[in-house]
Image (cartoon, rainbow, N blue to C red; front, side, top):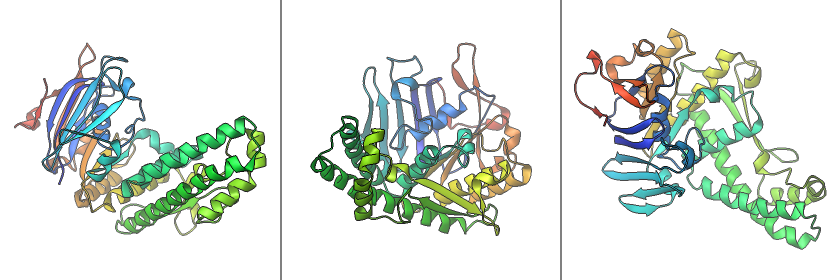
Length: 369
């Protein structure tokens, strides 16, 4: 199963785009600023959350804040629609019926890699935590509900801390809620990492990393609800002084080492860090056999040598995932072009993105109005 059609209306630089898709990889080639990434971002909105750029719905409209946008897709006969009408938040409809965003995760798993993620291993723990939770969500859609429950209880606890409330009775119930949700979050994260590492072993072309969950100060490797509740209680005095919760699953980090010397990813070369990240992304897509997978790779070929690009395209051919790639020139995709749907993208003087037909793009398949 795969996305058979993707339609954009007033999204970013695209007033309208209608793409007929099939199981072949889709390559969008064109200069920087042409609107290629905007198509991938639209596809990423078929998943729960804010998509690959993390943007607010109002910022994604082509005509600016106060305007609206709509994205539609056909997935194995199912109709998926998500939109942000003027003045409203994001809405989702499945088969023309209103649905929560979390329902998208039960139809399609979306995995992406963007240039901003190249700094993952050296960036702040918060960045790696967001990456880990997006990865975890692809395996466990219920992870979103656990995270929402944890965040809600933590906000209430932080309010008590800021107000300098010292009565332990006020804290126990909230810490119990944080502990229960936090234990689920931890189980989901550990399960996802185990599945990704198992899938990494299936590809000899990319380095396999040993991934670990670093639960934070004062926690064992796999804290349960009792451990979390006890740590929260023990930290109340320090948290009161700080006015916020300084410990818990919201402070966890993702660790990665590779090679016989167990080199930490943060100390590896730039090329090795990129290869490790790509290895994790490909393993994530490979380990999701139960639902259709959409793999979005933005400007992925730009910093890979010819040998690594060939290995990437070989791996894409082996994956049971629908793949969309972007790059500045079609020559970057020579090795995959015979098996791909090649599309050229440009932007006109008015800032409107459009598809540009070339002799190699004969036949139908995509429509621009």
